[in-house]
Length: 117
Length: 117
Image (cartoon, rainbow over all chains, first blue to last red; front, side, top):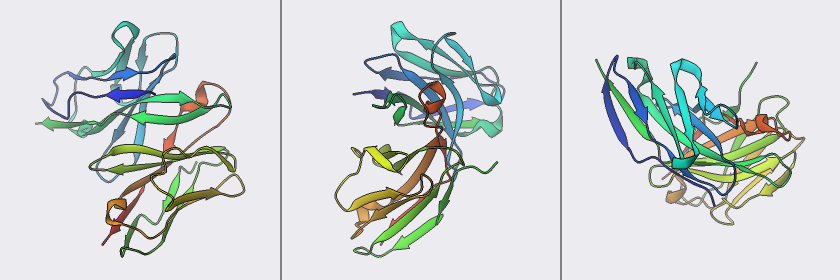
């Protein structure tokens, strides 16, 4: 069974500082990996995804993530954080269903990002 | 275009009552997913529909929980004899549901916050 670990429950960074959120996964096959962001009272918004190919993927809002198979990691980064980035961030791994389509996503426990001015 | 919509946005019910939660997926999306988000359990998968059938119901926590989907579109999650531990945010997502990488991109609705008193 697949699993995702986000070791940091809460991170605080200053506006303008760089950010790295950690994600480690466990999955028996080629993983399909995602980062979602959730603002208070909102649903989940897809930031970026990794399926195959280039291990550095670009997403929305200036975020990027790097897939490292040897470390089973998919860390999220942003060079300069804005106050509006304060939210909860979830890493997820996708499973393959029996029809060849996606089945479920397994999420990490999330990292809450606080941005100080 | 319209995203995933869910209703009601908030539901307060008394313990022992039945509730129905509705999800309207993105037009053309054949796959539909229900997740539950609670403080103690994080984001948990409940059930997945491909068309009107549910190949994976493994996440439903008890036989009090059921879901159906008709016409390959709207889905209803029903919780019978609600308990306080059912209090959570219930999230619905949809995806294209065709074999291939794009099927893994799940788009989430805003959720229904269920409070059982």
